[in-house]
Image 1: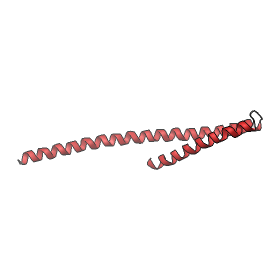
Image 2 (image 1 turned 180 degrees about the vertical axis):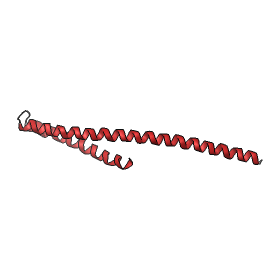
Image 3 (image 1 turned 30 degrees about the vertical axis):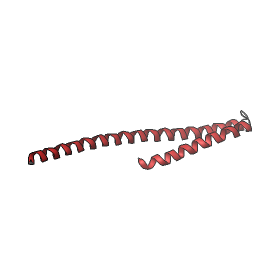
Image 4 (image 1 turned 90 degrees about the vertical axis):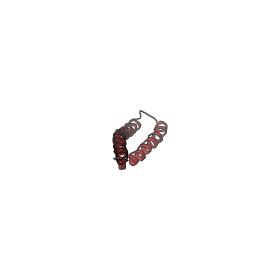
Length: 94
């Protein structure tokens, strides 16, 4: 009887360790995925900032019209705001 209980406890402990190991691997993979997403979002924000500069340069150089400038600006603004919020949500998880 005692041997049976001990055997069950050992099996249960081994199973718990195995599950903990799987959980830790998943957490590690999730963390790496979040880091990758964070890096990509920050890169995209930087690209948008460069687009702002180019767009303004094109406007001042009269390569694009004021109407086109005003049409493109909100698109960049909304995407940058979306990415900034996403970055804010991901950074505390690092």
